Length: 348
Image 1 (tube, rainbow, N blue to C red):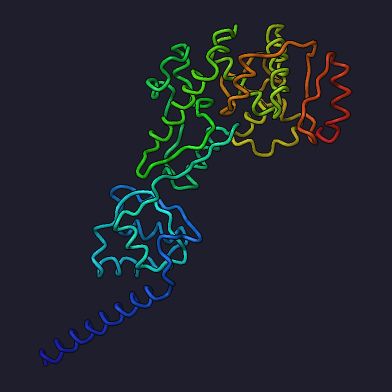
Image 2 (cartoon, one colour):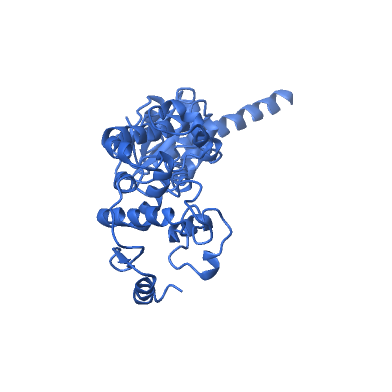
């Protein structure tokens, strides 16, 4: 009786093994082979120390596999389970399980990943991009650092000691970066800050030396110009207007600062209301005189240049035509109010 029960148990175990083998085999045959030339590339980051279970769940979340269990069994049966290597991979939804395992176990990572940061993005917007591309974890944030954490990358810039306690806003230079496999959040951030320093030193040094304004104030000004205007000439004239208004203790009344006060991702900022203009925030230049306490975005080279080298004019006011995106300048408040009624009649 005992031998019969033992036989049945072993037989059932054998059937289960055959069933599992068939499931894995069918999983392998469910996709056509097209490895190493992804027609639909999907970026996947495999972090150092990631378990087989974590890797399989990551592939499922990216829509690359449908069954993490089958992937894990295939990896175990094929001997690849403990050979999967960290790094950034470009995988294809059309690949088979065998393709995925071969690429991951042989460490055939994408040699680099092009990360493009456009002019005028905020820290929050850049952080969201990094998370969406799985370059950093959901728990990581730029808010965990201050400028002093990257002090060695800012050497040579005329920054007062008090500024080093500020956030990184304004110091991540817009460009395309080559992110290497396994590069940490700190390393990615450091490369952007170092690029900011290099750009200022190599291309704006003369302007910086001649500017009567301190560096951090000029950076804040550049961030306002970046969000407000698109034309380089308009930026230089507007820079002259804003510096002149500051000198006369006039409120800057820059719409972009209100947007930043509302949302650091510049959401729902097309039509500001009177209620928005009354927001109690030090960034609201309609309510408070002077520059905001820090930059409102990460400006590009043309905005930085305009902030360092403003153009003098007889103008005191400006607005941006929503249709052409060009600035409309005015010498008097009466002219400015007429321009508001003409170009921004639907905004209030």
